[in-house]
Image (cartoon, rainbow, N blue to C red; front, side, top):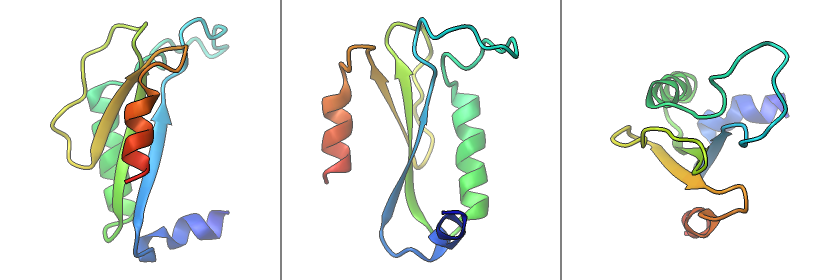
Length: 102
């Protein structure tokens, strides 16, 4: 798996990376971190920059999954990044499935 990941830069097709926030009601995290229940635009931008640095030739989209139950600012205007707000009951997944089936 690690070798396949490292070779992604040479992959000729489209690649989707998915980063999901923890769902609402998830048991408390033992480290005390509370910033993982919503992914911010700053966090998405940092991850996008890291992926571009690691894979400069790769055609990718970073999919951010945030939950509608957790208030957060929309993530817009970041190249190669799409945010989907989903519900704990999988609401919002239809748009994501349409994107992945293109």
